[in-house]
Each structure stands twice: as structure tokens, then as C-alpha cells.
Image 1: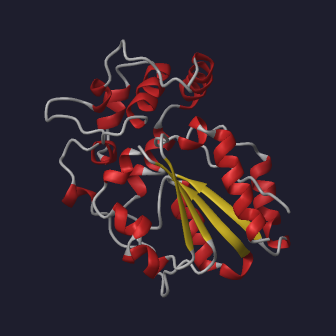
Image 2: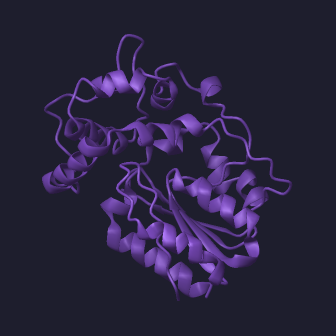
Length: 246
């Protein structure tokens, strides 16, 4: 089994060899693709466009969402974090009140909760976390120092632009069905499970229509960062899936 690791990091600390491996992917007949969060749509897109080259697709935290314009503005209040971060300058001003380490800390705390991050009208997203709130037990001070240093160097522009401010892009796919074996891993306490329509996309008729060969596993205590929270369990699930479809 060959593994290609294509880095797509929001802190812009990508390894230059990434582009070498991208140029060599044509020489690989069949691959498994794994995508986390906003990497999931990219994984699904490649799978739809090149099903003959994909043995299976694994996504973490995000199910397949049929192509179409973003509907967040129709189903969430103005203070929903994605809507706030899509607004040019809003997140920059919010984040700019703190050092990068504090921003990373707040994001990890917010996204590890089961409640959706929604601010009041006169409140910013960073204000949803009190300064004395402890880090999640599985996220160490060393982790925070490392990520904080990376974002202190790069800033947050890529982290805002690539996922949040590109959500309006629409791909015209004639047959938007994931036909290869697919595996979705979700944390049972992931706040995104509360998004309208999410149950239908993970276990309902929409899932059957667009991803007919879908397996879903919920890790009961898992949150949005389930792969960091339970790395051994997630790795085993992924490797078992690979084994079944090799």
C-alpha cells in the first residue's frame, strides 16, 4: 500500500516536497484519500472526478454535502462563527486583539465543545472563551506553543480565506455521487452534528443518495478534533477500512 501525504496547512508551513509528490500522482494507479474538516470536500471532489483511481475515501468531521451555494446565511444567526469569519476584516480585527497563541487556544476550546460557536450581536467570537477556561485535557501546553508559534509566523489569512471565504464557490458536477467505498468518522459530541440537515447527510436518505457505499462510525466522546483526541482509535479505524478495500 502506498501513502501520499499532501499537506494543505492553514499556517502555510507546507513542506516543499508536497508539490513534487503532487506532480508524481499521475504515476499512482489507485489511492485512498483521507480528508479532515475542510479537507473533506477536496477529498470528495477528487473522488467524484477520478473514481477509477480511488480505492476509497475517508473523511473526518464532515460528510459529503451536495454541491450548491452555501446556505449558512439562511439557517444560522448573524453571530454564527462561519458567517463572522467570512466577513472581510471581521475576524482579522477580532483576532488582532490577541497574540496568535491565545487565538489558537480559544479556537481549540470553542471547537471542542458540543455547542455551536455563536456570538451575540455586540460580541466577537473570541469573546466566547473566558481567559481562565482550561484547555481540553488532550491538548497540551506544548501543542499550544507549537501551533501558536506557527501562526505567529504565518498569520491567519490562509486559515480564513481557504476554508471560510471560499465556501461560496460552486462546482458544476454532472453526476455528484461518491461511488467508491466511503468512510465517515465523527465525534459523537462534535458541534457540527447540530447543523441543520447534518443527520440526513450522515445517516439519512441524502447519504444513501449521494454516497451509496458509506460507512459511518461515531466515537461517543469525540469532539470536532476527534483525530487529535483519540489518535490510536482513529488510526485503527482508518487502517481497518483500508484493509477491507485493498
